[in-house]
Amino acid sequence: MRIVDIRETAIPLKSDLRNSGFDFSEMTTSVVAVITDVVREGKPVAGFAFNSTGRYACGAQMRARFIPRILKADPKSLINEAGDNLDPEKILAVMMRNEKAGGHSERSVGIGTIEVAVWDAVAKIEGKPLHRVLAERYNGGKVMDKVFCYVGGGWYAPGKTTKDLQDEMRRHLDSGYTMVKMKIGGMTLAEDMSRIEAVKTVVGNRGELAVDANCKFGRDEAIAYARAMSPYKLRWYEEPCDPLDFAAIAEVSEAYDGALSTGENLFSTQDVENLVRFGGLKAARGDIIQVDPPQAYGIVQYARTLDMLARHNWPRSGLFPHGGNQMSLHIAGGFGLGGAESYPGVFGAFAGFADDAELENGFLKLPDRPGIGFEGQAALYRIMRDLAA
Image (cartoon, rainbow, N blue to C red; front, side, top):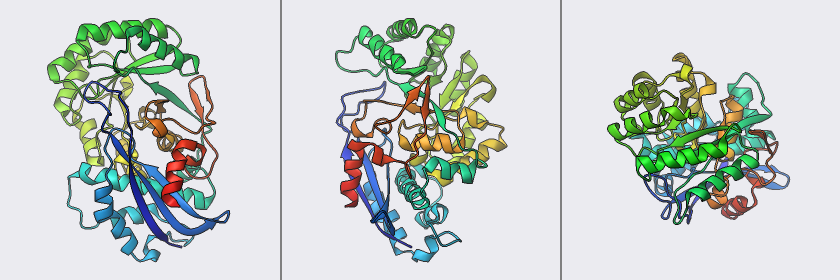
């Protein structure tokens, strides 16, 4: 058993959407195929992944360092003790050889994307969906059949009106979501409060509303928004300021009556530990940590992050992996986390879940296809299939 090739390609998103800080007109993402010599149903098993949207394609690092290290390694050194499957932990260790401490974001996305593709291959070789494999290894065998899923939206777009925003949120609620999230920070405080009020009238008693500032604010503006939004009883206030300014996050936490959410732009276990040490977050208040595993060294390292958080008495119910895709859905289900997010119709082929995904009363049924199940996403799988061909 061995990995025979690893391939990467960069795909443009071609989106005119924007959040409070940037637009996606130049955004690209890396798609990875890990091809093995294991044959299932007459074809070599290939594992797939992509670096979830919000970070640019990172193929240069993959091709220069991480892919060659794997392909040069003794194939036997990358196999589990039973000799019947790949070992993601050993493969992660090979990719990290000769890497200096720190500087995580320069490499964590490339490594994490390859590592998640390895997990896709591992689960396919076992003939199981990835969430089941993860549950057996990391959650005491507690296999879930569904995951709570909220929907992200409320983007700023050319010509988009408040009525358009309301109609968008109404469609999400009508499709079965019980929690919606909207962007803030792209207009003035007064204009954003008006937008929040408009969406609250649509949501009513049908669900909950969260907001996302995408790290836009400095300390003072973040606190001003916190105080202005306190009466709205939002589910959470996400990424109010720079994700590494733990002192400012702590001050926002002190000023805000509701829950905070952050962590999608943290790429190491140590940064997440510093967040819970110094960021003023409160699990008992319903605060949420949103690490994105494919962008933070992958699933093995995410398991280590969960172990660290457990030592800080942070419950798994307070964790929602960032991403809004099949990868984050399996991770949420496999580890028994609080839920996942969804971005339907936003990022082209990279948005959402399997074409036959079933959403009911805010919960998404976990798929039973082997691996991550990208094969159930026709548009995305065409890209992946062509890469592996």
